[in-house]
Length: 620
Image (cartoon, rainbow, N blue to C red; front, side):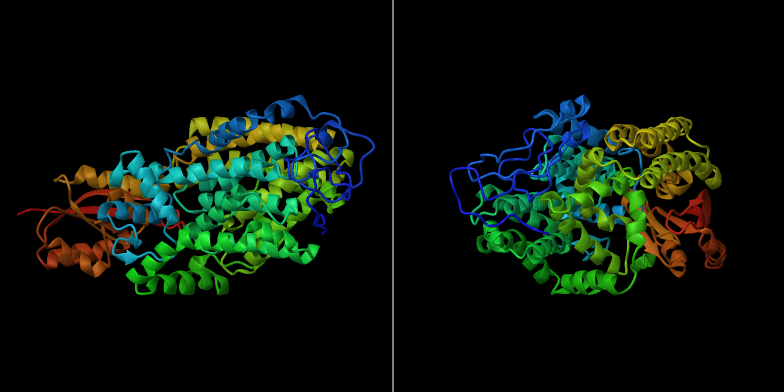
């Protein structure tokens, strides 16, 4: 890796820097600098779509550029000033909104987050984090505060449905898309930045996290914001940087800390360390204003961290650091252990459809490996990816903070690939991935409901039936033309069809897996009072607690009969393996109970078949 040399501040263009290999008239944003790359003698539409960053002096006077052929009309129009952010927002919402209101709470993490936020609203305690009576000291408070704010702003308060608690994730995912565009603009022209941001919007993993009331989508946005500011400070090679960028960098880093602890600091820190080590230059770090910036960060994050330490007598740190964070490093928690390399294999699914184009785009990226955009994105992605692979606990969303870096690299490679067409074997692999995912989802949209004992969603199957040939024709186009840039909108259309089908119709129609919502409804129907007390034996999913209420009791089988003997309107839900013993003991102890209903289904966690009886006490 090589970085532009530290330069004296002058009033004219920097004559000591090589001319940038600009792939688009207008280049990157003022202040962007690029390492040298061989100028191309011929230009193509695809090549024009992106750029390595252009050098600029303090006043934003660009270094002379190599003019290139304009990009395709659709890309020029989409990436026009003022148009790109609007189109990217609409694209992101189109990808993220299907099913947003329809899918019930998805066990187990989502309802745990939502329930803890709900209890903050119920108790007025916005410092400690609790799930029913138990402490929930795994993550900092940031995401809970955002969910509480969403419930208050919408007016639902503690009665908010699950989609209200998902709003911060939706907003975070949309911001991550827009911030990817902003980050890429430090290095490239609007066309490549637009493609990179679109890749983030299309990615399966981002669509999943945008629909879940968890911390990861907001974490992604904060990391991309910090990296966008960091990129501009690195590119400027100036000892002094605008306070605006410094503010963005340290604020985003603080947000990442209060959202998910050290993850953001790790990703940004490893990026900085890699850039310094491989370029052997550190002077640019002063542009981050590290001393006032770090003090500002502490002012933002310390109040809650001090308060929670006092409130829990240090218990938060023992659990969050000792058991949760370090525990995940040494061994797989909650059955999520996996060997190194699993994240890399999973990427071809979680980052689809972008992942399909990564291999054929890699040749252009390797060729231009000395450019600033490639250096920065590799420093962003590679070290943290290695860390995630070495950590014993692995979940598909762990590598999501690295997706924007790979999206920028892939977009750059896609735009530059026209100068050096990719190898046919790589094109065939990409085509296979583009075609097989929609085909597999078509099969799953029919087979999964039938396996679970439910009827397939007609609308979902029809949309998947459109998506499968769309994926095939996209793959055929790529094989015939090797036009990576032209493949992008076709892949995006296929992805949109899939997300509308799966999230809008197929997933909500899988009624056997939505046990908690059906059980809550059944309890309300059989209850003989407005607000019954409810105990659950054998079914302890957080989604049931969130939907039925904070006072829902989760108990061992031996506690069922004594509890039913108590006064008041009481309902017991009990899984079949414990049911016979409960009925026998109730009869022996003289407790009269009535079987009022049953709910059967498949637990989405582990796939165990459940048959839950609903009992109410019979008044003599």
